[in-house]
Amino acid sequence: MAKETAITMIKIKEKKIDSKKVEDGASKDGAKIAIKDVKVWYDDFMAIKGIDMTIKPNTVTAFIGPSGCGKSTFLRLFNRMNDYVEGFKMEGKIKLNGTNIYKDKINVEELRKEVGMVFQKPNPFPKSIFENVAYGLKIQGIKDKKILNERVEKALRQADLWTEVKDDLKKSALALSGGQQQRLCIARTLAVEPSILLMDEPTSALDPISTAKIEDLIFELKEKYTIVIVTHNMQQASRISDYTAFFYIGELIEFDKTKTIFTNPEKQQTENYITGRFG
Amino acid sequence: MNNFQKNKLIDHSFKILGMLFTFLGILILAILIYNIVKVGYTRINWTFLTSLPSRKPENAGIYTAIIGTLDLMLLTVLFAIPVGVGAGIYLEEYAKKSKLSSLLEINISNLAGVPSIIYGLLGLGVFVRFFNFGGSILSGSLTLSLLILPIIIVATREAIKAVPHSLKEASFALGASKWQTIKNVVLPSSFGGILTGIILSLSRAIGETAPLIVVGAMAYVPFVPQSIFDTFSVLPMQIFNWTTRPQQGFAIAAAGAIIVLLLITFVMNGIAVYFRNRWQKKLQ
Image (cartoon, rainbow over all chains, first blue to last red; front, side):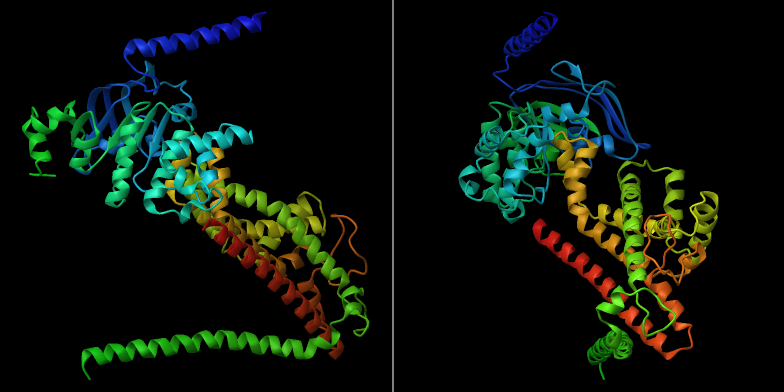
């Protein structure tokens, strides 16, 4: 009896979350990120100097700014990847759909299933293509062959890689080209079904054709995910993002609709940077 | 002679010099092996391998020494690998950087350089006397484990350090815990390096004599050890003992035993190389 009540309660809770998302204007899966007065130190060096920002669900937000401005550090706060960095210290709140992810009780592993990340350099595991995509699922204890096969295929299709590799799933991922490897890394991340996708300069190591493919992909993925992308490529930011944030030496200088940032920025500094006068 | 020609000459001379040194090393080893094989090959047969030691050189065999060596190595592997690899993983993946951990690191590196006789004395004091294991296989293998532990720890750490950070990050970013990352990404990628370190350390242990003399290994053991508390002999002990005898027959027997010891060592190194290559191929 008690068990049943518990189950119904969980179901009700799930429903509540779903309806809440719809109320927020989110279509399906994307999550909202609310950042409040975030400061970051590496030992004595202050890398982020107090940033407030809200990232809307199912949008693509681009972080731009010169090297060392803290945009990567800021991005890596959202899945707590900085936790392993020696001397890292953080203040402030980052709320994911209302939950502060820097609370003590937060399960970091659970958080990272919700917030996927694609890195600058393609970093497939030295395993087969299948094993790479199935990695996150196996970590969660999913062993059922049928489920694994289904989810791997779905993720590879989402990452627009399925047709290229469907006959070579057992082949080593390291045999793929750089662009394919990066799409594999995206597929690997999607397989875990996160709601937020963080991308840290995902195309900086790729040729223009592979870059175009990934940009198309980002455009498709925002239907279901909230995407935050760090990029050094102004054209890329203007092509794919809905919102753009300009960072400079640990501060958020300007954050607005991409169109506004690129056509009519409020701050002189932003204009100087996007027109290539510095940085 | 202009500068260009001079550089070319230096370049060329260094190449030849290097080649000479390389061949010199191999040549000396080859002469050594040739001499031993020339003397000892007459003794290499099944009877020699399966006979007990004897006062008469023509009857003497190395059965107990081989069994002792194998038993000792087996136990040493059992003790040293889990502890050594575990310590290596801990130091590399879990230990926070602090004064204590850097002190530990320096000391482990230093331990790798401590003369083996000192380990023998330690073994005598701790295992033979304090724990009262006596001059047994157990004491011997525990002592050898201590001897090779630092080598395994250092090798494990180096192998783990060589795993690209980006792979670990990828694993963490997919929601893997630290242990899952170690198990699924770090260890598979560093397995070849760790294995090489283990086998090289065992190759060292298999040839050790000094610490075992101190711990109490016998040169003359007329029976095969039945338990880990029995006294034992090992091949290097047998060789050492035979070479001190005046009879010519024992010198021949010693040469035979050296051949066997070398073969075991080569086979072990061969296995290490095989596994490492296989692993590297698998990773590509």
